Image (cartoon, rainbow, N blue to C red; front, top):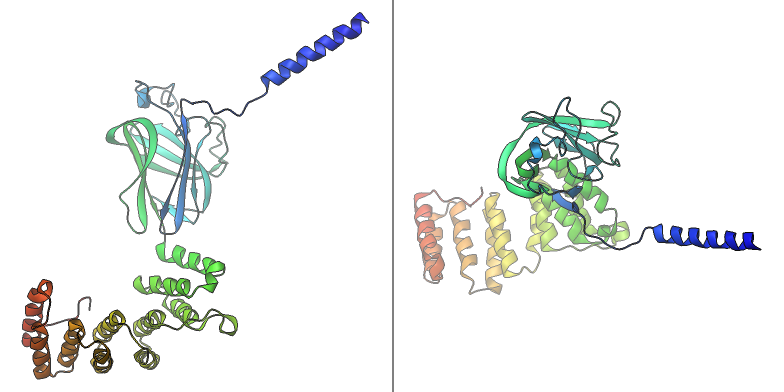
Length: 368
């Protein structure tokens, strides 16, 4: 009986100890806080995940207990706790070196003022202690450190943004380790469009038109962009979600002009001219026609629009410019001088300049 009672008591104590030792779910402040940050370059998401230690008065870059610099340099986790990771949703270039999309452990090997940045496809390590430089690494690049404003906490900054590249920099204390992340903007954006247009966006004419217009504005992938503009206009299977309008017809016309497909362009211009254009659409359409060297259709469209909007001064300005581009300077000057009388004050100075340029034969449509 005593043995059974003793066994029961031991079991109870052990159960209590096990229960007491189980991990809880409380959030406790940590010395090195967890940071997860995503920035988007073009359509490429760049995500950094790291733990941010503080200097706490230490000379961190010269303290081998913080960053291993003494003797044979070894890899450092570029943060605290788990290795820092960096993720890319498309292929990128790191200082001009190709790196495939994916998640990488980010490590640093200090070699004096030169730092070796390591992108390891084995990305779920605690620290850098077991990093295998022969088996785990996809890319290494060397960078020079530069001074920067003092940062108590280790962090990463996105600097010097361009449309297709950004400088990414580890900063801690007064030192920065910068490297350039760049993308093939046209290729990654077009590939992203192809993927997204197969999802819910396939039912929205605006998505097809916006994809086509982005390509037009960047002068890339024009043939496929034209197909996207057509899809915006005509819809998908059995014409589902079709929506012919001034917006997508104008995109189509601009693509046809860029591709020098004259007959199709003329047909599309006729199609647009048959629409009931708003005053803003009429203005934009006439400027487009003048810009591509088609003043006669511009004049015809403007005459119809001015019937609907007789008090809009800038449509009459465009009509005067249409006469100018048709080599009828007399009519052009007469129209422009009449427009000057009704031009709002904020545009009077530019109006005088336009009249002078037309008189001298030097006027050009902006952007042409």
